[in-house]
Picture 1 (tube, protein in one colour):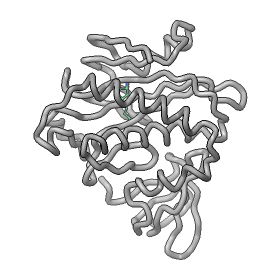
Picture 2 (tube, protein in one colour):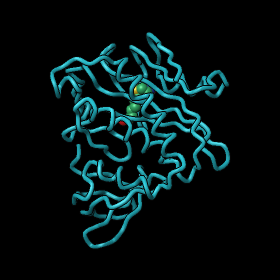
Picture 3 (cartoon, helix red, strand yellow):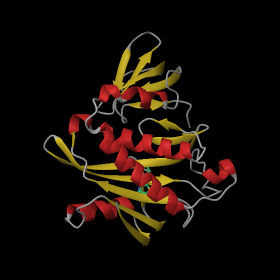
Picture 4 (cartoon, protein in one colour):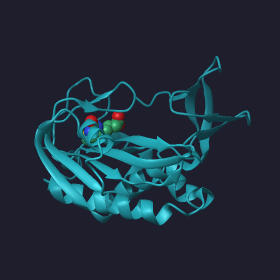
Amino acid sequence: MKYIELNEIDSTNAYLSEKLLSGEITEPTTVFTHSQNKGKGMGQNIWVSDNDKNALFSIALFTEIKTEEIFKVSLATSMAIYEFLKLKGITTKIKWPNDIYYDGKKLGGILIENKLDGNMVKASVIGVGLNLNQEKFPKWLPNPISLKNITGHDYDAKEFITGISEMVEKKLNEIKDVPFADLRLDYLLNLYCFGKIMMWKIQGIKDEISGSIVDVKPSGKIVVQAVSGQLCECDIKEIKLIDDF
Ligand code: BTN
C-alpha cells in the first residue's frame, strides 16, 4: 500500500477519484489528510471533522469484482474496520449498509465510489471517516461519538489509517472469490439491529411497518421481513429505519 499525506484537501475521495481517472494512481494507495473542508458523506450528506482530530482517508483498490457482487467491497471494508476496532478492545456494530456504530451512535462512516467497466468493478475509492479524538460535535449532527468519548484515551490517527487500510486490502483479496452466500452470515451477525423488530418506512408501502432484517443480498439490498410475514427487498433509498435518529 502506498500512502499520500495531505495537509488540507476538499475531500480525500474526490482527490483520489480524480487521480484514478487521470491514470496517476496505478497501485493500491491510501490518501489521508489532517483537514478536510468539503468532506463527502453518503447521498447528499457532508462529513464534518475538526482538524487533526480524526482519521480521514480514502483507499484506492483495483477491485476486480463482478458488479452483481458489488456489496463485497462494502462488506470487506466494514468488516475490516469492525475487526480492527475489536483488536483495540472496542466492539462495534455495523449499521447497514456501512456505518460503524457504538452504543447506538455513529463512530464512523464509509463512502465507496466504484469505477465500473462492463460487468466488473475495476477500482474502488473507499473513503473512511472515523471519529477518534474529537470530543465535541456540532449540535445538528444526529448521534456522533468518538473513541475518546468512549474510552477517554487519545488515539494515533496514522496507526488507525495504516492498520485499517492494510486490513481492508487483505479482506477484499480474501473474500473476492468466496461465494457471497458464505460471507453474509458473518456480516449479518455484526449488524446493528439484526433480527430485532424495528419500525421501518418502506417506499411504496403507505404505513410504517414493523419487521426485522433477515438477509443481505450480493447487490447490497437488505431484506426486511414484516411481522405479517411479507418480505421486502430494499436498497438504501427505499427504506428508512424509524426512531433511529
Ligand atoms: C457517511 O457516513 O455518510 C460516509 C462518510 C464518509 C466520510 C469520509 S472522510 C474521508 C473520505 N473523504 C470524503 O470526502 N468522505 C470520506
